Image (cartoon, rainbow, N blue to C red; front, side, top):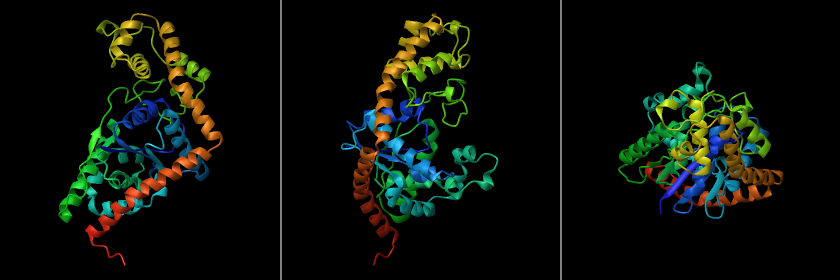
Length: 335
């Protein structure tokens, strides 16, 4: 059975984009794959985090996994920092990866911005830690969005160079699992930008923990234009000319698990005053139970902590022997 690894950063305000782009797919993968899902708190601290908020956000991501339907008995759910093999293997990979490879990572340039000299070293070597996350479990497949494909390519490069340097075939060459449908959920206020927790307007996103009233209100206020709902014909525009309209259609299609063409066939030509209430109903039906369950879990995190502790123990059982073999291959003396 293929082994899948993926992770989500505990940076707060999980939203619809996180759910449709990642967490929902985690649930779907677990029936046919051995799945390992990590709350990547080591990655989170590449930029400063409030310690109390980091603890809360770590639990919130784990709660989202469970509330969405990831079974902590079937899949492994854990927080990265509790499995030291991630950080230890990352150091070996820091010595395998080349500076030129890291210099080409566009995500570092995007996140560091114009103030690159003040960015943390951790942010720069983030991709080597991501490679360690995956390869500590010798995973075979990783679900990725478009913005992570470059990092996955680096993971493949690191695995291949390690194998070549030491004359082994120890690490597998990872295959990406790319889910195109609704993988990029855009802002409700600007259809050309991704939905993001960092947007100052809470109305730009639907948070997973929003209640029914908040979800309906945000959809009602979502930016559109005076034209009717697109019907798939050029006469009513394209995703390029009407990004907000097509974003809402894509969200509807993803939440209803239907092709976007079906949604346009049903609502095309109608005013958004008819479309938005239907979208709100679908969103509340899909997200409402998940939000309720997350709030229940967060009110008493005992169940979350128990699931994480179980996951940590199971993750270490896989990662510890991997690191020991790596140390043997590299030539580290282990008295």
